Structures are given as structure tokens and as C-alpha cells.
Image 1 (cartoon, helix red, strand yellow):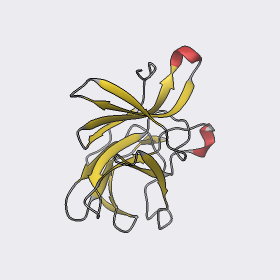
Image 2: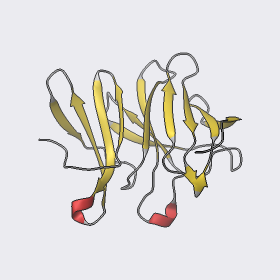
Image 3: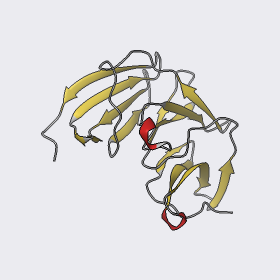
Amino acid sequence: STPPPRRDFAMASADGLVFIFGGNMENKGSYYLSDTWALDPATARWTALDSPTRPLPQAGGLLAAALGGDARSRLYLLEGPSIPMDRGQDELWSLDPQSKSWTRITVTGIKPSRPNERDGAGVSGWTGAGATLYLFGGAHPALVNDLWAFSTADATWARLATGPAPR
């Protein structure tokens, strides 16, 4: 089988697979999804992942891969706009590609020691010693140009810098 059509989904690769999560099925009247799929590019075969826990339905989530402290890959999802819409993007989840299971990460610190909810940001993972996620920009509700780092080792955010003026 294949994933249903969607837009505004999160996508990243790890361990030779391509993963997608969530999105919006416009043909269903803005129907938000909470499904996870893995594509094996070598066989062009999709597999639906059935995790007993998973993030809420959403579109616009940000997904990045990083190597965890146990030398296993992880995918990290910073939530996008969710249902209910007033909940905002404030949760961080981890997907273990080997066990195919989602785990909610308890982030330490309170704002302003972590980023505000936002959508349309860029996120990237750094693999190696001290696996880190980097988050830049987005909108909250206006455009922002801040750079944040998330330490996967101790589940903390650190504001690194402010970039060029938002555009």
C-alpha cells in the first residue's frame, strides 16, 4: 500500500529509509493526519508504521534525523499546527527507526529558554558526538529569525543567535 495524498507533511531519512509523518488531506476538508510511513528506496515499497503512542494529527511539522547517544539513529519531530488549533507547536517527539515507535520527549526549561511555537521554520539534525537539532526561523505569528539548538543528550534548548532580518 501507499500513503494517501497529502501536503504540509514532515519528511526525513534515517537508516536507509525515508519517513513521512502527518500532513493535510485537503480533499477531505482540511483533514489532519497522524500517520507515519517509511519508504525503502531500494524496493520502492512503503510500510505504514503502527506505534501505540504518536503525535497528534497535524500539518507542517518539522522532522530531522540525528544520531542518538546510543549510536542509534532517531528522527525528531517538532510539532506543526495541530488539532485543536489553539494547542500550538510545543511538543517534541522521537521516532526510533528500528523499533518503529514514537516517544514524547519531556523538554526541560521554560520559555524564553526554549523557542516559541512556530510554523514554517527550518530544522536539521547533526549526527555524531553531542547529537543536536538546529531550528531556524519560521512564524510566530510574525516572521522570526532566531537560531536554536536542542541537545538530544539532556533535552534542553539553547538560543544561539539571531540571523539576518526576516524576509
